[in-house]
Length: 257
Image 1 (spheres, rainbow, N blue to C red):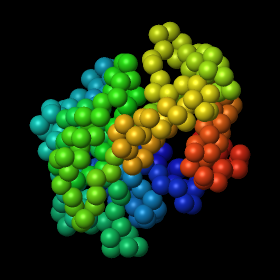
Image 2 (tube, rainbow, N blue to C red):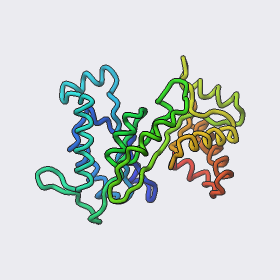
Image 3 (cartoon, rainbow, N blue to C red):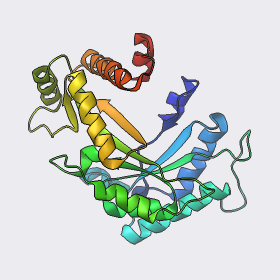
């Protein structure tokens, strides 16, 4: 999917959020992303997650590769980071690219202070999945503190914290809530944000400030593609009014979706 997305675009960064490293080989992941970096230098983000695949899928995978325990997962992640940074693969193979310093940007995706500290000690960027972190969508600023306080930089790279948030945006608060619930059906989860464009922009501003986030990753869930596209366009317009950025043309918004 990353190769397809990068192949039909020219400038945007493309990444994974994230590869379930407990259920795959670190070497295989590095080889795959070395190939992506070869074709799309400087545009690839390698996001790793420590979650385990769901039930039947996990049992099927374990026939080929035992799922890593916490300790084995941390060791596997450390090896992956070392291979990407050294741009060398076991056996003498290396990253082949048009630039000798071309390598994917590393992100750890997580929902806990433990994951935040792991990202910090490895000196890589951390994507905090606020939407999955707790049922009530509370603010957990301790996660940001854990990441930044444990951060050990590499090549003078500063800590970089992203907060991922899912919700919905519509012309009215009731419409946004109704369409969010309709997408999930029975027992819909609580969104990170929901409401009119102005309400959502304010909610995201609070979320960003609470974590002192460097970036937000935002998505809107709706029962139809048109409703989702409309939500993203409304949200983009509201955020532009806060930042003074130039709004995208409708066709650009559609391409981004």
